[in-house]
Image (cartoon, rainbow, N blue to C red):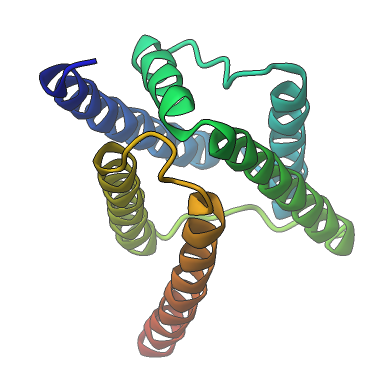
Amino acid sequence: MSYAEIKLMRKKQFLTTNILFSSMMAAYFLFVSVVPLTFRVLFLSLGCLFLLQTIYGYIKKSSGSPVPIFKKVEAYEKEKLGKEWDVQKKVDLGVNLFLSGLMFFQAFFIMRETNRVNIDYQIMAVLYIVFLLVVNLSLYFHVKKVDGAEFGDLQGYTKKSNIYGALLGILLAIVLFFLLIMYVLVS
């Protein structure tokens, strides 16, 4: 694959990722606004979704994405990363399984809750912007690392990127937690 083809593929990947992310967030906000949903049902639904993704990932050898650009990216990265691609896929499935368990655990502890999920659009707008920024930055650094490396130079990439991601995720969670507390205290 030539440099120009890779660059075009990556532009399409960024565009498609942003469109899908924005569409899913809008659908979520609309769904929660229209359907009277309790937190228990929300956590059970998310747990089932993550569990189904994990099961599908274990059965399917590839991501199985119906989006053509993601199939092309997957083939390119699988060739470029080699064995590291398999490690990355296993880690992703493990994270999905952990998130599924976490959602079921939360649903179990709020069994009797009948409070409906309410949306504070100011908080959701801030979270949307933060998450969109995180998705784009993580994709940017991933693309930069993968595309800039030679074949076989990416041994240990998954471990390093997951450690950095976990540390940045913890830092982001702390910052968002304090911002949320300040917002609640000011309101």
